[in-house]
Each structure stands twice: as structure tokens, then as C-alpha cells.
Amino acid sequence: MATPNYGYEKRQRELAKKQKKEEKLREKAQRKQSDTDAPHSGDAPASSDEGAAPTAS
Image (cartoon, rainbow, N blue to C red):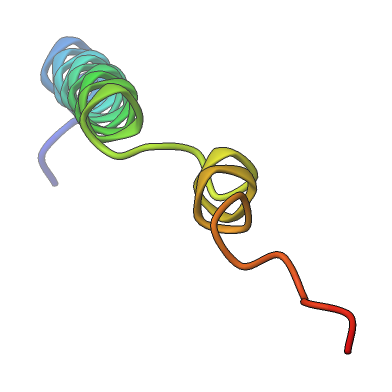
């Protein structure tokens, strides 16, 4: 019977861990970029309400 190749298994785990870490960093960078591109939801209504003042009759 063949003996397990622990070095190969360890290398595969390390590669999977590295790939997962890189993917997380890519997603984080993508979220950060999309946050800077789009205005915050709290900022938009404040600017649009300025011209909609109700008139008293």
C-alpha cells in the first residue's frame, strides 16, 4: 500500500488558503471602489429636499 504524501497535501492546503485570501482582498478592493463611486444613501435625499419646500396657503 502507498504511503500518504503529506508534503503534497500540505502544499495543496497552503495554495487553497492563499487563493482564498487573495479572493477576499479582491472583493474588499472592489467594495471599496464601488463605495467611492456611488454617493451614500444618506447624502442624496438631503440635497433633493431643498427645492421641495411646502407652500402655506
